Image (cartoon, rainbow, N blue to C red; front, side, top):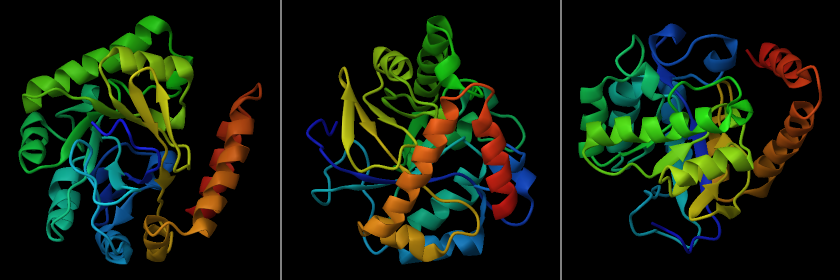
Length: 261
């Protein structure tokens, strides 16, 4: 594992669809805004001018680039992986294990196939709780330990990579992940700095949602400052809202998603 990594650029995607937003992954306004159609996603990939890296393999550059896909929607197998493979690329697919085999989500055979084709399979928790940072220590142990075990039994190898559902990272979330054997944990904080909690590396990510210009992915991958600063500013607003009583973040998010839909 890349324990000497100091900086990394990680881009966070979710599902890729043809037209039906309910065909892959979670549904609802909060989830649907992150679903790109195939042509849109192809444009994002075309704008990325360097091959991405893969956790656990030799880095291509001093600041590696990782492409990640959250939730475990079936489009990981039907759309995303083939589009990456056309370019000779591989991605990181984070699976919500309680949803394995349910409509719109990957089944065990598809997860195993993705792993055998060279993609990284990681945990996105068991249940994708609405706010994982509010879970009890026992709940956090289940979310990470059980999900890692379920995936390891499918891919027949240790699962040591994960991403935090909903962006609700906390020290308790990270500590529980590290205790479950996770060595690299992706958060949703838009930063290139690599942190650490115990023996676990913490990697931030820059999010992509529907309607973003494809050039955004290319600019972020190239290390451009402007799009990263915009996401960092938005993150600061969200972080402040999350800390206030009455869940003003949820109201703010609904308002902004409505404007972007």
